[in-house]
Amino acid sequence: MTPLRRRMLEDMQLRGFSARTQECYTAAVRQFAEHYHRSPDQLTEEDLRQYFLYLANEKQVARATATIALCGIRFFFEQTLRRDWTTLRFVRPAREHKLPVVLSRDEVRRVLAAVRIPVYRMCLTTIYACGLRLLEGARLAVADVDSARMVVHVHGKGKQDRYVPLPAPILPGLRAYWCTHRSREWMFPAPPRPAAAWRTVSPTTVGPSPAAVCRVRSTAPSSRVVSRRRRMCIP
Image (tube, rainbow, N blue to C red):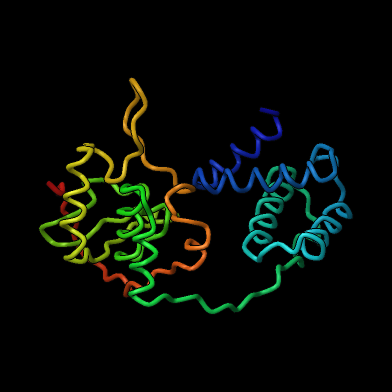
């Protein structure tokens, strides 16, 4: 690890950024440097301007990708290198207004039925029924499922926890699936390697076929807030 990268990571840790945010920001700066084959501290403001034109006009990246690149590069130059560049203040990714694709219940059933691996099928079913993000479902702990009050404690993005209702038809499936592995920690563990501890499934492999993944959108109702939390295992 270079001293520059270490300094940026330390700056982000001092700001309280999550590990995922740190990973995204450092990746954005690394891609910027690789584009010019130079160290990022040697690049100029004109290089920065041309890079964002390249992302917008040639690569035509999505707004979310451009936003992450802008935030990561801006943090690096303004906070780590202490450079006040006007380009960083007026670059704005184009706004997008797209309607989500909402599947019917029958379509959702057919998509979930196409998932052959049980851990992925049960994980996706829970994600859809509870309205979770992909990573939230993949990292669901056994103790986060409160079968007495029929709620799920979700460890959300940005360290913002919340409770969501647990649909009654999902609970028997969760119990039956848990009995197949009996992990004390994770609801959807990946198959353990020899002499290795249980770990969660990877979010990049949870989904069904690529064609089905791009179509699935959760239509679960908005989550209601529950004032108190009681941890209770499913079994």
